[in-house]
Image 1: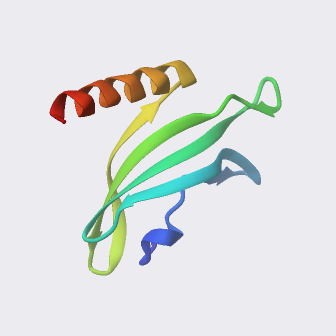
Image 2: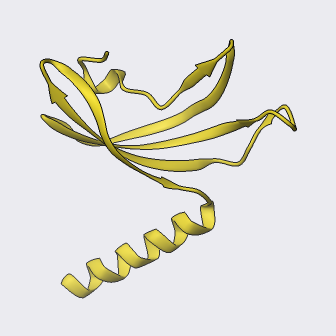
Length: 96
């Protein structure tokens, strides 16, 4: 398990193949509850290549000195990411 938020990763290796490749991450919050936004790619076994970039927001809870995944939301396409950004920008402007 991981004890430092900076060490958390979405990367996953199965049978020597990196099936989830982390491209970047942005730590949004740190502490007992940490939130990280990841940019990643999934390995497509049929095409033997990585697919388009995807995004995931993950929440971790630190208990007994180790981080544990508690929830996640995967943004499955760049179009969905743009829609999310547009909605957030609209709401933030309304709040000003």
